[in-house]
Structures are given as structure tokens and as C-alpha cells.
Amino acid sequence: MDTIEIHQYRALANGPRLLVLGGVHGNETCGTKALREVAAEFADGARRMTRGVLTLVPVANPVAFRLGTREGDRNLNRDFRPSVCPENAEDRIANHLAPLLAAHDALVDLHSFNAQGGQPFVFFGPDDNEGELEPFRRAGEEALLARAVGPRRLVYGWLGAYARGAARRPGGRIAYGIGTTEYMRSRGGYAVTVECGQHADPAAPAVARNAIDNAVALLGIAEGGAAPVREAAHELIEMVDVVDRHSPEDRFSQVWSSFDPVEAGRTIALRADGEVIVAPEDGFVVFPSPHAVPGREWFYFARPGRR
Image (cartoon, rainbow, N blue to C red; front, side, top):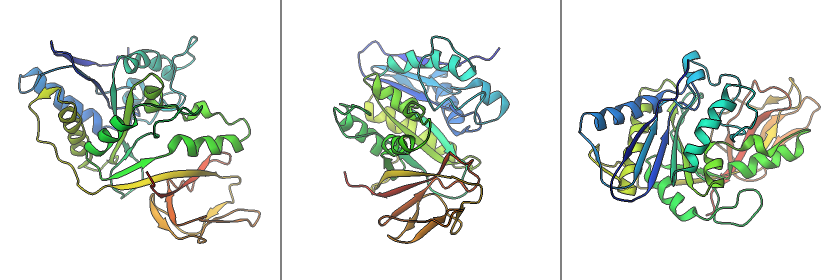
């Protein structure tokens, strides 16, 4: 039977409670490798806790990990919430993981991406707000964590951009945009996602390991491990909107890579019906998907961050 492997270390002194996840998607193994390295260091005494709690989950989705695929029955990082009547593997996994998230203050979720090239980046959440979409009161702590974990590119605005697309999509559900970090914020914690590089990049596990060590050092919960490595200058990017594909004949104007810059008015894509989609302002093409199924996300548009 598939098992969720959990390593937890509790200091006798009170302090922050940090949770680190790897393998939310089964084909993203950099976090798994890094987390098992850290767990081995605690096991052999090379590291020890000083305060608080540290919980490591090397493989959050054991079903997808066993298959070597992104997901088992569905995407665990979408519509993440406990289910009264679980219908699939990811529902059952979320029922185990959701209480674990709620029992911690901070979450670092380690991922990798499919696109070739591109640099590691960090997703973080909104400013403090009392809005309906994602009310939040720990933006200051989350911003510190986002800047500490390592990658210089910091990206925010995911849920707002997704919600705009969902509102235009027949049957679109904002709940499908809720992943681990969004759920963590809804339970009173704060969270970042670290995209450590391309799936097969041999450097990605080191990025993941650096993110763990930096988060632990920031919170001051353990001794040992590598000295923190952080890039001084950060690039801030705000995701603004998402464009769905309507027809299999919709096409991009060129081959786009994620975070390619685009000038205001430049053509990004062309619809089968002749509509030309242009950049509304200077910004970036993010997560272009040339083989997207009609009715699903085709690409996101982002702009330089303004926070």
C-alpha cells in the first residue's frame, strides 16, 4: 500500500513550526532528494533542533510518485481541501495532508517545472487584505520567507489571475485554483512554492536543498546544515491574467518560453477566428502551453511587480 513518509523533529523549546513538502507532483523529484538528505543528517546527529517544530514530507503524493507521473487521478495541487467523501487518490491524500498543514505556521512546497531552460523562481501570496478571494494577515512574514529561500525571481498574483480566467470560463471554479499554499493561508499560516528548475536539471536538488536550509536558518529552528545562500537582487513579477485556448487552431505568434518579455501591443497569439491577442502593456508571457486543450489555460500574462 502507498504510504506518506513523514519525518518530524520537535525541540523542547517553543518556536515556529515549519513544514516542507516534496513530491506533490510525482514526477518532480528534486524536493524528495533534498528532503531525504536533510532527514539523514538529523538521523546521524549532524543536525539538531534548537526550538520549534520541523516536519519533512519527502513524497507528498506517493501514488503519483510510484507511477512517475505528475498526478495519480488528478492534480493534488488543485482544489486542495479535505473531502468528506473522497473519490480518488488525491482526495484521500489531501485528507491526510490538510490537517498537517493546519498544524504549522509556515510551509515551503518544493516543485520543478517541465519547460526547458528558465531559472528557478518562488511563488508567494497577496498583501494583507480582508477581501473575499484570499484574505491574509501574514504578508510580512511570507515576504521574508520568499526572499530568504534562494531564487531571485519572486512571483505573486497567481490566484487573482486564475480567478479572472475562471470567471470567464463556463463552469469555471475558483476552488480549482486552491493549492497547498492557498490552503495554508486559509488556515492562518503563510507559505511559498519554490520552483527549483526543470524536472531533469541536475542542479534542481541543490536549489531545493538550499531553500530548506535557508528557511530553517531564517526561522532559527535548527543547527547544522549548509550556510544560507541567497541572491541579493530580486526580480518581482505580478501575474495579471490568464488566456484560455478556444480552438485547436488557435496558435502562438512564435515559440514562447515562460517569462519571455513582451512589449505593449506586440502580438502574442492568434485565434482561429482571426482575433489577434496582443500584450496589454509591457510584461511577460508565462506558462505558454501550445498543446493546451480548448477550454483550458493557454498562457498567463504578467507584468513587473509593483509591491
